[in-house]
Length: 443
Image (cartoon, rainbow, N blue to C red; front, side):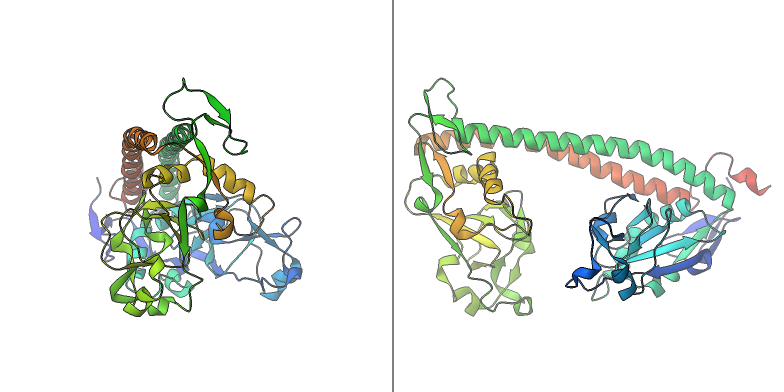
């Protein structure tokens, strides 16, 4: 093992004596960002025959960009004086989602949230990609101390890069490619298993909220497309006939500028977590805002569903603080009478019974989907007697808990492997570990 020396850079620590450091701008032929043509000008966009235009969404979860959601015309390109970058260009995200890297697999242009980096002969592009991967957490932590979690090209150009010989860089890149590919295969397999488990859980929920627990009962046709056959003694009900649906009428002038550090709690869609409300993540508003609409003052056992943004997230309220209200993206469901169990309706809204209806409602809708309150009132569901609802809830609680525990274990495995992958990349691009035969390259 060669001797180590201090790099004088916090995130890097010690590096091998024969390695050097340099600024990224000295390791690149060019580092430049893109732009966004006016989205209201139809002459600037052509998603069929246009020029691929990379946004954060195209690269944030992809190591290689093979296609883009949007494409622009030559006029759009000229309007912002954008460059077209060749295949193999390294992309780096600098706004909102920061520190992500991808390689272009197509000729494309980029928006202003991304930097295109073209390395020079001092650095191997794959090695640089891994180097930037290793910096991600440090960069995010550094940005979080600012008012906006954004980078800029000047700061990126001054990133300190660790530079072994180019021949060792290639050895490191080849080693990490093989190592990371194997780890990614395991991660992908675990993700597929979680997806299968979630589908299995939804199928069980659907089966029980449509057919019940006793398969030997007589069935009848519900005459509802998204329900099918149900036990003979069950009823089909409009949701508006069993519960009151309440939501904030727009924002009623409420803006994020009104959020305060203490006071009544405001529930938004981002506060939903595994069927509950994460109270610690909620914002606060004034007493006046809380008292503005008494019909959306929240209490325990209220059922909530998101109707904007990520539609269809469901939560059953528990451990409710004294003063809680909703923003306009969340809908409250509260029983008209004691005609249903809150947890039973919670499971209905998680089932394919609901989602089949929702998909039918949104056929032909190519814009952003919403759960419209007036349409939702016409959602029909299968409703058993109260005691049977309780039995189904008890069964599903037990079954879903078992499945969720398996999913949780697999998610922990994913987290551990992701952490291991990060540590492997870090150790090799900073020289804490060396690829076999690397030290011999220096004589």
